[in-house]
Amino acid sequence: MLRYLVRRLLLVIPVLLGVATLVFSLIHVIPGDPAQTILGDTGSQEEVEVLRQQLGLDRPIIEQYLTFLGDFVQGDLGTSLRTNQPVTAMIAERIPATLELALASMICAVMFAIPLGVAAAVWRGTVIDYSAMTLALIAVSIPNFWLGPLLALIFGVELGWLPVSGRGTLAHLIMPAVSLGTGLAAILARMTRATLLEELREQYVIAARARGASKARAILLHAFRNSLIPVVTLVGLQFGVVLTGAVITETIFAWPGIGRLLIQSISFRDYPLVQGCVLMISIAYVGVNLLTDLVYGVLDPRIRFN
Image 1: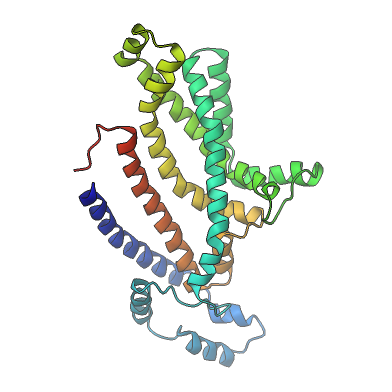
Image 2: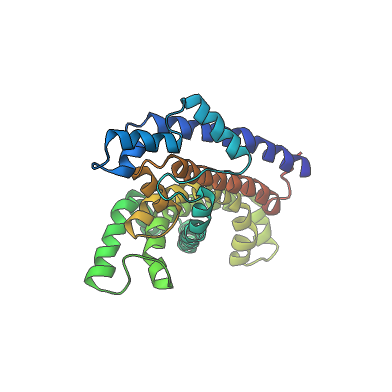
């Protein structure tokens, strides 16, 4: 287990370097001048050139890239071109909000998806099964950039039950979490149904019933546990999707997280801040994948990492 963990951690290094290189390359290919964006239309050409020299944007791209990599290895993501604040501090300030939204979305999705998938599998071919899968199909077909404004219009504007923007109370969290977690819940429900149906056909479930175990015990303590491995895999992979989807959801509901900070930094052509936000999302994605692999051993002792 220790060797596997060390090997996976070492593999993270080239992945992050590759992401950093890709982000740096793409952000410099996009048309536009950060200095001109900061000064606005009123800035003269001389003022723009002076600001470019102060920000180091007049240096060759290779030199800027090597400086960026050197600082990145030391844990320094640079300084925001717009606010002149350390990028690391700005991201650290937004991490709690993004984690709160992501975890709330995952909890919301799991709470609805697992019971729905189990019910559909246990009562396969019945009205419950067809209703559950139809609901899941509808949910997975609704994009969060459409569902978010719809929820805001209905529950925020028309009914006035929930605030449509900001962060601070549980009421502020409900609509963003539901908007972000709906698509994941639909995918999890379908996966739970499919994997549980496979396990219910296995001989050990029939043997458990023959030994006198109740139907509920055979399903929950035997079949359901073994069916969780693909579900856990999907949850781990979808966590990265939740983080990227949070970019849209945070913008819709003015949620002060990394996603909204990323959108703002892109609009201002703030190179260091864009790179820092994308790298943070990448680190979180890689970390969750590693954690998912380690959870396999807890759910299924047959899995060995050596």
